[in-house]
Amino acid sequence: MKKTALITGATSGIGEATAYEFAKQGINLILCGRRLERLITIQNALERLTNVHVLNFDVRDKVKTNTAIASLPEQFSRIDILINNAGNAHGLDPIEDGNVDDWDAMMDINVKGLLYVSKAVIPQMTERKSGHIINIGSSAGKEVYPKGNVYCASKHAVLAITEGMRIDLNPYGIKVGSINPGLVETEFSKVRFKGGAAADHVYTGFNALQAKDIAEIIYFTVSRPPHVNIADVLVFPTAQANSVTVKKE
Ligand code: NDP
Ligand code: 8X3
Image 1 (cartoon, rainbow, N blue to C red):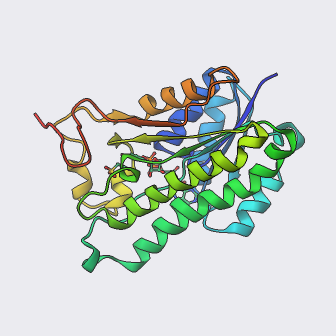
Image 2: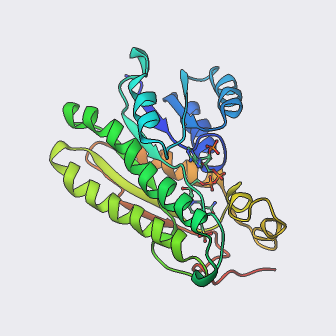
């Protein structure tokens, strides 16, 4: 039977690339994000390969998150795979200069949003005693870097939540794991720097990871046999040794 995956943050970057990778493999898709036009464009592109349903909501809104997921038509109502990917960094400032709205955005989207989506999906998985949840963390969830403060905290929280989920959902046979990338060339830096010039330089002078690289790892993770759960993956571009050590040409 074909599996169904719900992917948050499917309008760009890692989420979009994962949608393409899963579609190639014939996985039914529920694609989520705030930018409806993009969701529809991606749906139109992928419907040749698989069945696609779009859900347009902001993960910060717990009522809309729950209502959207509860509204799924019968054909998409069984979610086998949840990819909690929606998230971003907002700002890169020392803590004393940090913007409170940026802090709210990161905690509300990266942490609470992930919880709201999970809360809406987990009950059907526990009832069926099957399912697979992958949380997209970050190398920033394993290591704090200068000015990373709150973004790093949000991704450390994603790792803690992942471990907690794996323990609590273990009796139900539900797989839980996290994929933790280093620098991936997506819209991430445009969002972090609010479209400013700083975003243009983040990925220059070295070969950054591409969204497809992470999408392939995500597909590998979800395509392991039933007894194999990949719990935690840390992946850097070859040019990156840790959060602050990047070999530029
Ligand atoms: P992008 O900016 O390209 O994608 C972010 C996605 O998240 C978009 O689809 C966006 O959709 C969605 N999103 C953001 N805010 C919300 C919201 N409030 N409600 C619903 N959806 C939202 O960045 P990436 O693909 O790089 O990021 C994806 C994940 O990967 C994030 O969790 C990020 O922290 C993580 N990551 C990224 C790395 C990188 O270097 N790029 C490295 C490590 C981890 P829309 O705006 O349409 O709502
Ligand atoms: C994204 C990678 O190093 O910009 O999570 O925090 S980094």
